[in-house]
Image 1 (cartoon, helix red, strand yellow):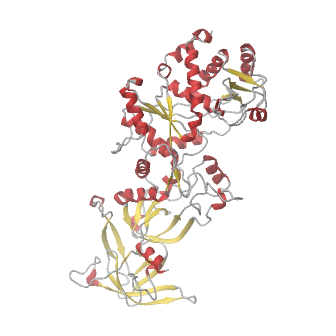
Image 2 (image 1 turned 30 degrees about the horizontal axis):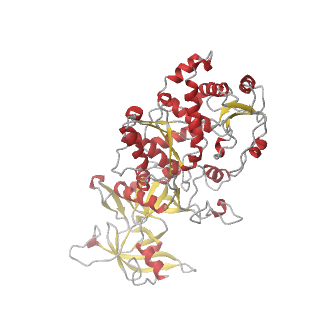
Length: 590
């Protein structure tokens, strides 16, 4: 059984209803075996996370198994880098696979299955060019035109297919096609390609092969070889399902004719013994994930990386799992998000705000709190002794006292947020202004006595006095103040870099650009704001890369997994903002 996170309470979706019915009818003898089958030609994105959670979740809920299979049938686009990243992403999400096969593990079997199809009269070698095949395929309203090579003899097709394998033919010179029906209403069944010639090194098999099976030929047969019971795909594969069925059913038919295997009796015995050929798998489709304000096409994500719109696959603005991880999203929040959106049959658009809500809810429970000043201005407390240092113990997480406290030093000069001071504050502004008293979080009451500005009117320094009786930020039974501000000691604080990330795109649906534009025209050049003059508590000095936390009153952040160096260089990525009530007030005020 897969080792996966505990199953949350849920209603039954249509896939679980199918499995329940199969179990009631004794199909697969109660066995449930799913798989997550990415092609290793890029990094996984949040849409893949939905499929991962579904497939591994089904195995968990039904005490079954789930494979992580790499459908590596295109050597030109695949790489070990992507294999490693996919394994890391699945593990980070909290799942363990039962088996980790590759489609390339089955190249030998698939080749002999293709020969079997030829012997059955179900496949032929076609020497038409790609353009000719495309032109002769027909339309949704018109049938296709049969290839002039369609009725070659079995002997001719076997000889040519073996020449394809031996490397005697050039790329594109011919392909192996299934012999189905050129008038089929589903264009996928109009003699689809099964094998093509590619003289290219494969990331696992090197140059052992110069022909490679097509995805649609490989996919269902790999499911059957592995004994998959329920092959769960997204809706774009619904049109491919008849071809999936044709490949599996044709093999089932071929297995009833062991004499066709000839000298390959060992291959026949191995295939005939597999559970997937005694009780074949079936494909079911569910709605893919669409999120507002982003793109989830692997082709488009590759373009963003290659054209330098982002720093890489793990850029925190990317919708990749590695990008979300670097930005500070937790696996629990992504699993919660996938659970909330559910499994449906119809495509829909999910608001990105739901994903942010999931991570806020999770981090509110688990994130330690610290103070960090993003846009600093110095506050000088004139009546505080210059050589005095107070140390305050402030709780790390009000949601969980077991987190304990951290020590926060207080000195005569502290940094506060520039936005927390206004020369002429409006009525509903409860922070600092001339003659106004506020609380410095966990420290003292302070009252503004004056300020300095530059030639442009920008505040360069604020002066204040403090009330020694308010130590700890409270006066028992005494006067109250409305405003509480965070701060960092100017003498003891650490200078840090903070990276504020916002949506990579300027529109809700970059997948539907205006006429004459493409999705990259909507890339926001201001989606990354780098603040290099920030100050944070010294308690954060040894924070490890990847650590999640909250900057009080500002948002949730994490220590960057690449550029942050504990004890030397402090780089923090904003995961998401907090709900800012003052921002809403400002918006209403215009």
